[in-house]
Image (cartoon, rainbow, N blue to C red; front, top):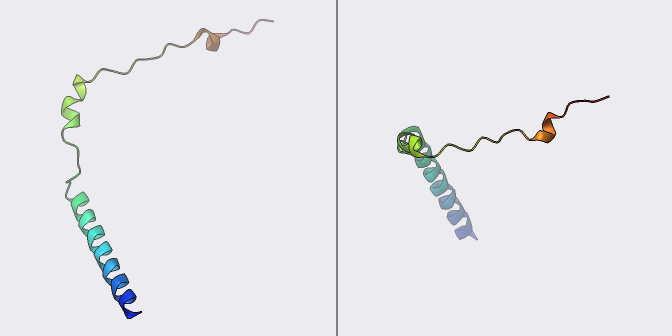
Length: 61
């Protein structure tokens, strides 16, 4: 039974260590995207949808 407590404690410590390492990596800018902004102008623009005729009704009395 004491082995479960040891394994649980070690796994929590390892989990906390990985979380701290992840936070340090994010703060240092390791996951910043520096490639996409430089090639964004090469992508095609999204098509702009024209308003449909149904949405431009006029009220007739």
